[in-house]
Image (tube, rainbow, N blue to C red):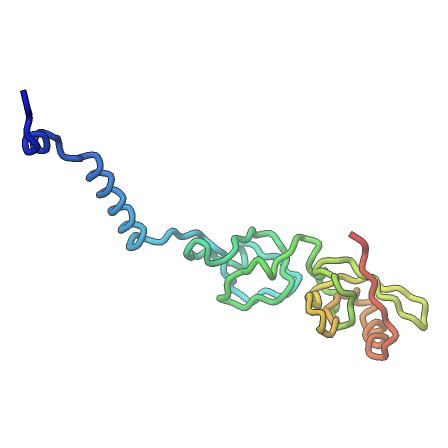
Length: 179
């Protein structure tokens, strides 16, 4: 039996599987474009938080934000810079328990070595008195090669006045502990 060209085409079944796959891909693309954006909870300050304070449930509240907007943070860390009420808690202002300035320590701007990072232990040598004061780098100078090299260092309250006087007169040198 000889079949004609028209009979062969007419007897083939329609491509249902391909049509269903194309429809599923189109529906998924539409859902991705107009569907709800995924959200995650993120802490926001409910009161002003000072540097060195602990960030916890008592001074923050969780709000939903779109996924990927901010770097996720864990509560229970100390702050390295102030957070104002209503602002989100950013990963860049948090540190581990020992990285922030201890409570009650005084902070002063002083020349620090390049490569110093927030949380590094510092020793401030008072040149003309042969004394050493312990400190913690609170804010680093950054990696700007043309920058001033100044940073914020926290110092014990008992030695803060003498360190500030020596720094103002150019008699203080900061050493950073090796990693």
